[in-house]
Every structure is written in structure tokens, then in C-alpha cells.
Image (tube, rainbow, N blue to C red; front, side):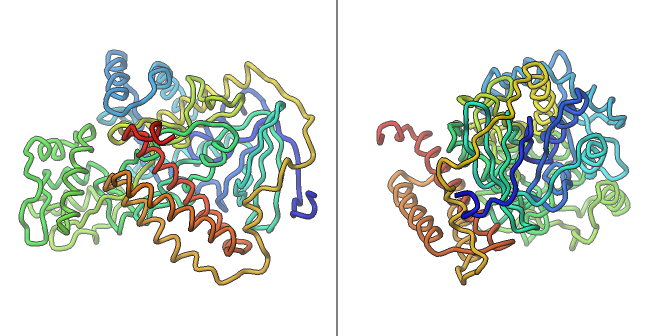
Amino acid sequence: MMKQIGISVEHYTPILIVGTGISGLTAAYYLSKNNIKYTIVTKKNAPKQSNSFLSAANTRVPSENEINNIINLTIDKCGADRSVIEALYRNSNIIINFFEELGIPYEKTSFGIMPECLIKSHGGKKLINCLLQHIEQPMCNKILIHLEKYDQGIIAIFYDTQSDQFIRIFTNYLVLATGGYAGQFCFNDNSPGSTGETLILAKKIGARLKGMSTVMCHPWSIYNGRQILLGGVVSLSQGKIIDEDGVQLLKDKYICDAIARDDYHEMIDEILKFQLECIKQKKDMYLDMSHADENVLNEKFKKYGFSPKVVKNKRIKITPTMHYSSGGIEINANAEAINLNRVFATGEAQFNGDLGIGRIPGQAFASGIVFGKLIADKIAKEGVFNTHYQTSFKDPPETMQLYSKENNDFPIEEFQKKLSTLMMDLIASNPPVVSLSFLRKKIQESQNIILSRARGSGKRYEDILTLSFGYFVAMEIIEDLEAKSGLLSIQK
């Protein structure tokens, strides 16, 4: 059976880490410190290709007297689970120790710390490059396409885009550190690999997903959403956001003043509501830089790693972009998936919150570092390893049906654009239940079309998989919207 469906390689590893962002690499780092063997893989062709590498790595580290306030804020404003947020911020001392162990100098920010860099936006690069020197070499080009749960552990199936082979790995402990699903949206600043397949596969083996309609658009993106301006540049606008004719659009003086102070991070919800209203009215938005000293402006751009060419006629065109997804796998205070023993979710793969934007700024890196260590500590303490595993499938995975060495003419790009538009409409407009029911049927129809018609190998097969999992993500968004409306339980 296995040979017929193309499994080329199989092996055992005690711990399998999927993802090479800050959370996956931190778990690997602390496992390495404990001399525990593991395998770490990524779907990218290089381990540096992650959202973490693209980030400035601004990491929230509350002072002792701020911890209770931050915990309560994150629960009340973001809908986070109390036990998880307690574990995060009551262990935030791990973060300072982590930076110091790695020998990375850091500077204080408005809510925490970030790596000290000549170019401020390169903090993530500095952290990731350093971590890669302390861990086992990651295996690249491995796309996770299937999971199966057994008493002794987990079987994971990967497709290797480089060798055009399927690989089967058995593990006792699985760490899912693959990021979220913001990459399914056309306008996003994420690594292309953030497409949500791990969340869907985890649900298929018993994990619970929550908050899947909760996402965060970042207000200050340039280059059609691909890059985000940091607050140190945005503050030079003094909070003046204008239209094409120079008319002030943002009228709230309190928010304008906060932007000018680079202290707007707790007001992002309000800023995004304002921006979405501008978009509905089809008004382009610009940061007004006309009153900023040109030398100061150029110096800031240089310091933060941006090109001054983005300033045209003393203004910068901005648009909100999909920055992160807060929905994900529900976990306990050890980052272990609810209902799944010895399966962990960390970073953006875990559920962060289902209110507002789902989490507060700086939480992402803090969470990746803290839970990366807590996961490694739990595995080191527990240490249940068993090399015996089953050598046959329960059933061949559906994802393999999409594979063929003979590509066909299925219009993948056309379907991807339609899916992205549909998902953005779901997030932005909060459609009525009747519309949700109609969209659910449309998604199911598209899924059936893909299963019956889409075939390919290599990069084409990867694109088909991304599209297929994207429809499952869209279904999860619909389920979450129904649950939030209080109608899901009635319908069932």
C-alpha cells in the first residue's frame, strides 16, 4: 500500500518540530541545551524564511508591577485564556535570560525589549541567525500534508518539493510552530508559508480550534501591504493622516497625539476601524510628512531600514495589511493541545484570543520564547520515548489524491484570488447568517472541484495544497463567526 501511493522515506525521531520561526527555534535551542535529540523541519527552502525573520522582534516584557495589568488587559480586551496568559507573563523573566544567554544586546522599547541593531527592523534577523548557530540543522522543503495519532505518538507525512518525494516520520512528541494563516490573504506582510495547513491537520486528529475569525490588520503598511512602517517613522507624521487632496481624515485628537508619541499600540482597534471606514468610502490614506525635518526623516528611514523613496510629495501612502491571525489551536498552560497528549502548539499556531485583534503588540515574540522553553522543559522532565510504531496507513490521505506527475490546466491562481477576496469579506463585513450558509455551500463546491480536477507535482502541487487548505481555513472562519453570533449551537 505505501509503495503504491509513493512513500519514499520513513524514519523515527523522538521529537518533531515543524516550523523555524522564533517559537520552533527556541524549543530546539532549549532541547539542544538538554542534549535531547529532535528533528526540526520547514516547508521553506531555507530556515530563515519565516515571519520571525522579517520582524523587528519587539518583545513584550512587563515589569513586575505591570504583570497583573497586562494579564487582565489581554484577557478583557483580547479574549485570551487566563491560564495560558498567566503562564506567559508570569514566566516572562525567561525572555531576558534568553537574550543574555545568546549574548544578544537589547534596548528598551515602549512595552518591552528588542535586539540592538543598527537597522531597527532587523531585530528578527539577528535573533534567528543567532539561534540557527545553536541548534540541529533544519530539514527544508518539507510540506506537512497529513497527521495520524496513535497511542505511542504521531505519524506525520511530508512532501519534499525538492526531491519530489513523500516522507513519513513517526515521533513521540510533536511541536507545531508553523505560524498562522495570514498568508492566505492577498494583502499581507507574512512569509508565504503562513497558510494554516497545520491547524486544519491538527483538528483532524482531535485538536480544538478557536477564534479563527480573529485577525489583526496592521495600519501602517507600504508597498501594497508587503512592508510595515515602525512607529518611530510613523510618529513623524504627528498623527496627521490625510487624503489625496491633503484633507485631514483622522479627527480624533487623542489618537493623533498617541501616534505622535509612538504610544498608540493599545489603540490599534480604533485606528483600524477608522481606516476600514476610509476604505469603504474609497479614500486613499497618506501619512502627512510635510512638517517633518527632511534630515530627521531621512535619518529615521536609514535607522529603521526603509527607503526614503516611499515618501512622495512629502507624504507616504499607507494601507492596512493582514499582519497576523489570532485564531488557532487551543492549548493549556504547558502549550499542549487540548485533547492531544504530547502534541504542542506554539507561536501563531496557538489560539491567542477572540476579541478585538486577539493579542496585544509584542506578545508574539514573548509567547514564542516563553512557550518554546516551557515545551522543552516539559519534554525533558517527562521523557516518554517509544520507537515502536505502525508501518501502514489507516487510510491513504486525501491530500495525496491531489498529486500527479502530469500537471493539468486547473486555474489555481484564479481560485486563489477568489478565495482571498471571500476571506477578506468574511473578516471585514461580518455577514449575516444567511450569507454564511450560502458561502459555506460555495466553499464546499470549490473543494469538490479541486479534489476532482486539480493535479500537479513540485511547486504546482504545493500551490494546490495551499488552495485546498485555504478553503478549510475559510470554513473555520465561518464556523467561528456562527459561534460568535450564538447560532452555531442552535443550528446543530
